[in-house]
Amino acid sequence: MTDFLNILLYIQIALSGICLYRIIRGPSIPDRMVGVDIFGILVVGICAIISIQTEKSFILDIGIAWIILSFIGTLTLAKYLTGKKLNE
Picture 1: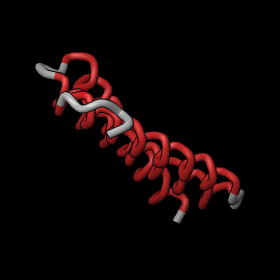
Picture 2: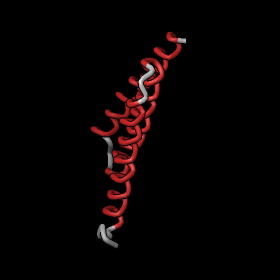
Picture 3: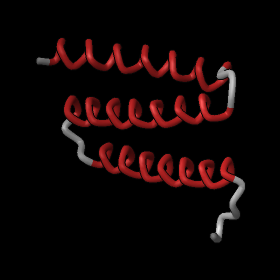
Picture 4: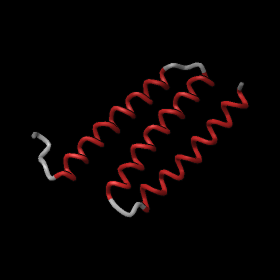
């Protein structure tokens, strides 16, 4: 079971690197934002795997906080790209 989780962890980290490349070199702002969203999801997956391996549940709290901040950032950027103010 531990070997399987380690393989999943390495896959998640490799995919995170690909997302970082897309965030840095994305051709447009929406493409970069998609990369940020996918990166956030991968970070939550990494936190879940590490939480299972170490049997420490507070790591899941870090993942939940990360995904909430990612969601708020996505909403903010979507409002900005549509040309609306944040209080509308």
